[in-house]
Length: 477
Image (cartoon, rainbow, N blue to C red; front, side, top):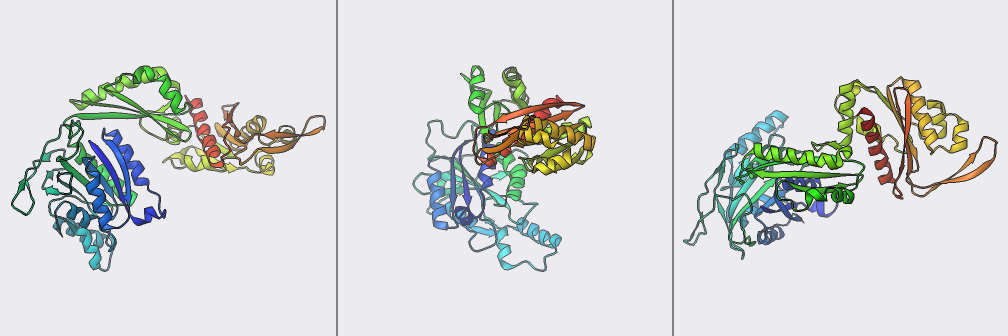
C-alpha cells in the first residue's frame, strides 16, 4: 500500500520541536511492508491541510497523520479531514465518557468547553480510544476521483483483525458512490494510478508518547487488517561493518531476491538490515525469515549483536545482569556517555558498581593510580594510559570488568609535550578521532584503538561509546 506521513503543527515548521514521529512511523510502516512515498509537514492552516490531503491522494492510498487533535482553536485536523471527506463532526459519546473519566482520574476541577472539542469526531470515522491522553485517534475511509471529490464511507473494525464491509457513500446530489471493502494485500491499483480507489486516513495525537501507544494498540492492528497475507520481519543490528560493505557482502543473497527481502539501513556508527516475508500464514512467513537469517549469519555473523532491533547498550547490559558480572567504568573523552547509556537498562544496579569521569591528568593520577611518568612519556591520550586506567579502576573497585576511554574527540588535533625515560622532551601530535579503550576482565587487559578520522566531537564521542559496548560484548561472548 502506498502511503504518506503527514505531520501537522506550525511549531514543527518553526523548528520549536523535533519531528521524531515521522522517523518512528516511517520505520514501522516499512517494516509492515507499506511503501512510504512522502513525508509532509504542514502548519495549522485548514486550507493548506485540505489541499495537501487531496493532492497526496493522487499517488497514495493511505495517509498517516499526527498532530492537531488538541483542544485549542488552531487544532483543526479533525474539522479539515471531515470536510475533505465530505463528512461532519458530531459528539462521539464513548469519547466523551472517556474524557470525563480521564478528567476525574486526574482530579480536574472542571472540563473547559474547548476540551469537549476533543470528543467531537467525524460521523463516519472508526474511533480509537486513547488510554494515555485525552485526544482519541480515528480512521476515515472514502473514494477519490483525482479531481477534488472525496466521499467518506462508513467502515467498521472490531479491533481483532476483522474489517467490516463499507456502506456506500452519498455525494448529496442524488449519486450513490460504491465503496470498496476489500484489499488485495499487494497494492490497491496494479496499474499504478491511485485515482478512483479506496482512500484511508488515520490520525493520531502529536505527543510521541501518546502517538506510539495509539499506534501499537490500535492503528497498527487496524492497518494490518487490510492485508490478506501474513507479514513477518526481523531487524538485525550490526556493529563494525558499514552499510556499503554490508550490502556488498550480502549481494549473493540480495541479488534476485523476491521473498524474503533484505534491506540495509545505516545510522551513525552502526548498520542494520531488515529481513521481511509475506506468506499465506504467519508460520510460513516466520519460517522464511528464520531461514534467511541463518544464511545472513553465515556472511556477517561476527558483526551481529541483535536480531530483535535492540540497542547495543541494552544487549550488553542485559548480558552483564544475566551473567552476574560486575562492571565499573572510567571515562575521559566520552565524559560519562557510557555510564549514561548503561543506566538506561532496567536492573543494571545489580552489577554496575560505579562510573568515574576522570577527565584531567590529575584525576587519572589521583582516582585511578595512573603514574605521572606514564602520562609524561606517552601522553594521556594513548593506549598505554587507557590500559592503566582500566587496571587502576579494577584495583580500586574490585569489579570483574572495567572499561576506560581516553583520546581526542576534537575539534582539531592535540599537540602535547612528552618526556621520555631519559628526560628528553618533545612535542607529539595526536590526530583528532584517535581514541583508546581499555578493557580489564578477570586480570587481563586489552586495548582497542579507534581512529575515526572525523573532526566532529559529537560523532567521535558517540563512536567511542558504541565501541566500548561492542568490546564488552566481545568479552562476554
